[in-house]
Amino acid sequence: MTNELSPRLTPSYSASMLLFALCTLAVSAVCAQDYPNRPIRFVTSAIGGGNDLVARLIAQGLTERFGQQVIVDNRGGTHIPQITVAKALPDGHTLLVQNNTVWIAPLLEKTAYDHFRELTPIMLTARAPNILVVHPSLPANSVKELIAAAKAAPGDIDYASGVVGSSNHIAGELFKAMAGVNLVRIGYKGTGPALIDVMAGQVKVMFATATSSLPHVKSGKLKALAITSAEPSALAPGLPTIAASGVPGYAAEAIYGAWAPATTPAAILNRLNQEIIKVLTTPQTKSRFFSAGAEVVASTPQVFAAEIKAESTRLDKVFKSAGISAN
Image (cartoon, rainbow, N blue to C red):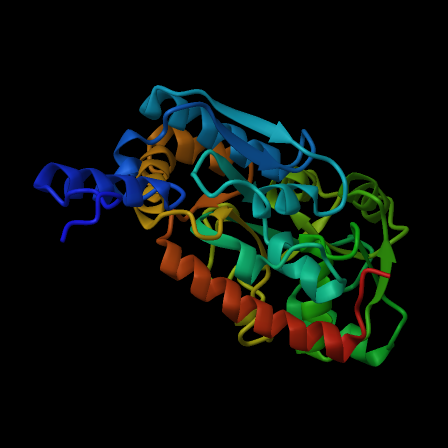
């Protein structure tokens, strides 16, 4: 006997139910064919920093490719960009463009987001190494000589850095741990004032960006000893790496990436990855990144996820052994 309250399972009805089921799972692979169907929002930190620059360069290219406006949404405050995207609807229209503070911050303090559970990587976009520079008055012309001087007078040589967790702070603490030296950190609210004091000789050492430090190296106000990238970089031709200068395995860079809310459909993630790669790998975009002291990477989500895991493990050990926290 047919239940009058039950629908008849006709072929057309079955197809409609299947489509309905697919479309109600957030945004499915079927629905992703229409993505994006409204403006995309890139959430990042305050205007003027490296995160803002990366977000704007990618947003400009994606706007042209998608035919939908990609808006850069600058959010100040501690962890606000990460929290905003972690709690957003996973439909590919609210994305995070940020550096490695996404996974460094939770190692230093309790955060209101869990990047492993609430965010999913889209790609590693670019890397920006630092240059190890010293004031000319410091009698060290190589990394080995700096290490020797620091070991000969523990605690007598200081280094300048920005806030706890910044790329130059991480670079300095990794150097201390891996080289086995006691450099005294002098903290600043920003890297600009820190570099000024190093050039004035008030602080002797700093791990500074290529764009901020190399002009002063050329003028003789600073000496460049090495670069913090794992491999030699075209950003500083002829400058050796710290790893090749007496500290094997050393590498510390600002790593920029893009994330989506967890459970964002794979079809949307793949589309975003492919389109952002096309934007990043144009000669014009590569040139603009290079001028800003960064090199384009444009990785797969899997490569980025593996790097996040490896870096989190490595840095967690360093922070715990050195007693580093945000407090």
